[in-house]
View 1 (cartoon, rainbow, N blue to C red):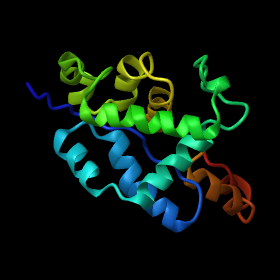
View 2: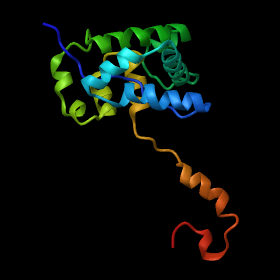
View 3: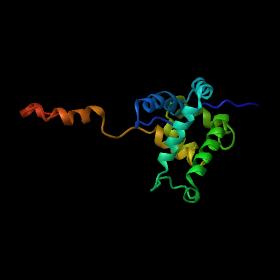
View 4: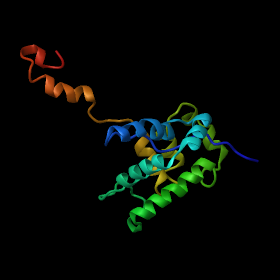
Length: 168
C-alpha cells in the first residue's frame, strides 16, 4: 500500500540579495509552509540545484556556532555531515518513509490547517537530528521588528511634537 504524505519542510528566510529573497519566497516558503499534497508534489517537481543550494545555506546558517540545535549528535558532526543528514531526513520526509511513515501523522488538524510549526514540533523534531530543528525554526511565526517600524525610525526624526510619536 502506497501512502501519500501531505507536508514539506524548510521555510523562508529573509537575508541576502534580491535573488536570494526571490528564491526564498518561492521555493523555501512553499516547501516549508504548505501541508497540502498538491503543493508538496509541485515543490518536489520544481526543486532545482539552485533551490537545493539555498536550502543547504539555510541549514548551514541555522547550525552556526553557538549552535542552538540541542540534539546530542550535532556536537560531533561537521557542517557537511549536518547538511547530508538534513537531505537524508528530507528524502524520508518527502517519501513518507521512516520516521514519517505513520499515516495518522498526516491526518492531523495541524496538516489540514497548515500549522507546519506545530506539526514539526510534534512529529519531526523528536524523530530527526536536523530536519525537525530546521522545520520548527523556518516555519515558526516571525517575531522581529517589521519594516514599518524600521522605516518609522527614520521618519520620526523629521516630525515634531505629537506627530513624532507612533501612538497617542
